[in-house]
Image 1 (cartoon, rainbow, N blue to C red):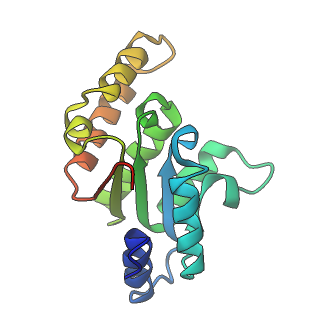
Image 2 (image 1 turned 45 degrees about the horizontal axis):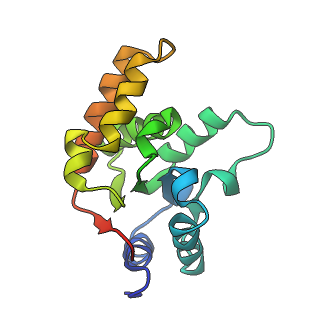
Length: 172
């Protein structure tokens, strides 16, 4: 394993040892761009690509002219693994939460393997929707454009992902 990017080494090692003929992507990256696009996620994506893993990152693989939402959801369905980089602003993004709910749905239906990264957030805060996650849900609940059923599905998805063993990163 590459000590600098243990997630990249583990994911690509596992992906290369299994048949991916039914998958378009080895890995789908779910992340909040304002928190990690230019640092952690950018470096992780580069490491995954250098290891030969076909990785979907929203700004790299979208075909021009396609609706972003349907393309992203389809990419989740066509991936063997999902790395979710849960960060401070992740739950403030409705789009991140829609991705998360789809990832959890695919985890149950298609056996998508989920690898969570807790980036400057505590796993127990994710499970229990505390700290910035609680603030994010307060905002979603006040927003008349957000469906209450969606909010409930997002909460369930966060709890499920918060219960998966992952990597807890702070200033590393």
